[in-house]
Image (cartoon, rainbow, N blue to C red; front, side, top):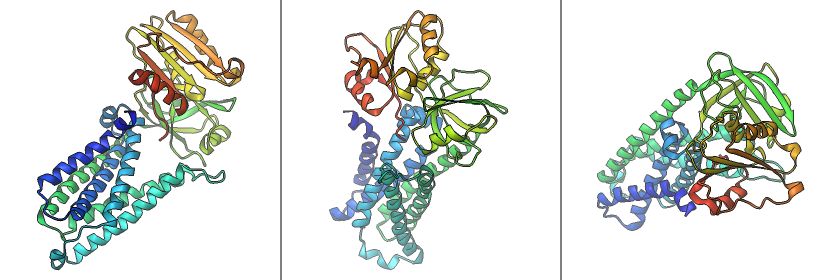
Length: 410
């Protein structure tokens, strides 16, 4: 059921476009109608990808957080690739309209061919980005810059859609309507780009700490900082060679009225290792955000917080903003291999002493073995989790809709 729900927006788009096509009362043979339908799905998916890439707050709220929004962005990309391939392998043919296809029409047909090839290259690069070849992985910055090729593919597809006159009027009208809606998505993408510039602030790095492979960063704004809630994340990069790529990290500091931000970042890849080695006090840190909707329920009842490894960062933000008169009861478990790799251990223990309704348990697997898990009969009304996908999927099967988490595989 979870997989079905994750693909619900894509299924919904396909159903709506299928209904629109049926209303037009198509009279052509099935392969021709299928090719037209595939083209509609491909362009619509590309347009929705632009809309999701705009990072508009209203769209983020609609999807329940940017993590889930970017998951849908990827899935619409898969749908666009599949539909474009179907359209390209079996293009619609209308021999009776050959005479009316002037030079502009022919250019539009050719643009569709070029756009499809660009889309296929982008799909191949996205697939390669998720693979490791003999220890080598496609660098993030290469993939990121190539991803902007979607704009070129979209423009070519838009021209193909709006100027291809080699088809009946009813299909031309549908193509123009879908093209206008797609143009609106592009406009919103540009609006989102402007708004992102306004949500981007310059910070000065106050301190950089390094312990157990984790880089701790504390920075204050040069002028005005971002205003974030506990548990949110931001895209950050530094104005320094090798650190200019923007990556998302959870803000581990509490809700600071002065705009101070803190991050605890595990060195798991090339970029995070460079942060660990090269970032220094006084460097300029560029912070874009905040994003995300990972928060704990502040009503009564019993809830569990489960952190594994560097997944501790949102919970570190929670305890730094935790009120003394906490409503309900919170049971927190922190899973690590050994105590030396634990982050913020003193703060969690201090919070457990300070707040009556908050309990904290450290579970080092080297000493205690595998964590037995939570009891399904404990009466938890909500379970918050941040950590590896394998453990997340186990908890999803156990707690279903009670489980709250964010995807960080985007």
